[in-house]
Each structure stands twice: as C-alpha cells, then as structure tokens.
Length: 234
Image 1 (cartoon, rainbow, N blue to C red):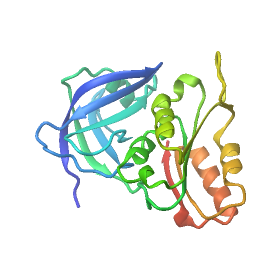
Image 2 (cartoon, one colour):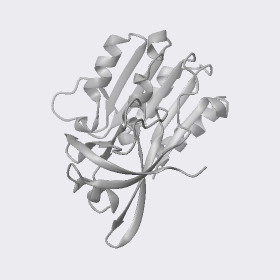
Image 3 (cartoon, rainbow, N blue to C red):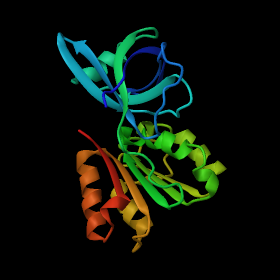
C-alpha cells in the first residue's frame, strides 16, 4: 500500500541540549494523523540540488494532526543541517507512518535499551495509554556520551515516579560536573538487569553496532528472536 504524502508544517522548535533539537509539525489538511507509538516518518527535500530522504522516529503520541521528532545535528551531514535551518511555518514533504518497531504486548515484562536518539521511539511507547497503568514491569536503560545527551531525562524520571513498575536507568560514558547516576555503556547494565532470565521482551534502538551486539548476546543467552525487537540507526 502506497504511503500517504503530506506537507508537514513546522509549528515549534525546542533545543534540548547542544546540537539536539525537538521539532513539532502539523499536517494542515489532515484532521487526525494515525500511527502506532514507535513508528517513524520519512522526510524528503531537495538539499544542494539533490533529492534526499531521511527517516525519523515519532517522539509524540497519536491523537491529533501533529507529530514530533527529535534529532542531533550532524555538522557534515546532509539532512539534519537542513532541518535545523527551518523556521516555524516552513513545509517539509513527509510520508508515513512506517515501521513495525512497536510494543508487541502490553502484558509482558519488557526491557527497553537505547543510546542517543534511539530513545525517541520509547518516549511514546512508554507513555501510551493502558501500558504502564496495568502495572506490568518495565525497565528503560538509556545511555549517552554526556549528561546533556540524555534527552527527555526529566520526563522519564517523572514517569518512573508516577509508575513504580517502571525502572529508569540512565548512564553516561563521559560524565560532566555532578553526576550521581551510572557510568559506562548500556550493555553491562542490561546483563545485570536480565541475569539468567529469558522470559521477557527486549526492545533495542540505537546505532547499528550496539544493537547488533545486544541482539547477538541475547540470542546466545537463549532468547527467541520474537522476544528481541530492534531498530537500527546508521
């Protein structure tokens, strides 16, 4: 089935940290943009005379004609500098929603593992209606290089306070200033949380190297492929 193409209008921008920007778009000719938390949109534009397309996970919940994305600015990249140059009112050709990186069960215990912007799809997945409210145990392990890279950190902390069944574990590899949290990569924390269990689902999102290393280790530990749900960023 062909994807619907929209002209997404930028409504609001908000900087979450150095080189990290949150974008809110609306679809003016659409009453309701339906998607499943965890899915993504593709955006296309002529950049330096070349048609360029990039995929971005949706950072918001459905229920309106708007959606949000969040990304890092890659200075020598092609598309992110273009998006960072946009101002409210600008239009971007957009298709979607796309993707199967969505919650497979609201009843099964799950661990969510993310690095960098890989945490974006977990924001709506964890906040969706009738998930954490059921009391199902869930753990979010989120790693970044620096503390300012822990996007939505306050939101995840607040979510864990409202839902004691959510365990939020942020970690950084290069701590700055006063940091009382975990230090290091996400993988050792994941193995610590899992122990010798194989009776839960694991969602992994981030750069290819991290995702593949986690998936390979989970398989080696006896996890079924259906219990390992991944999304890789190049």
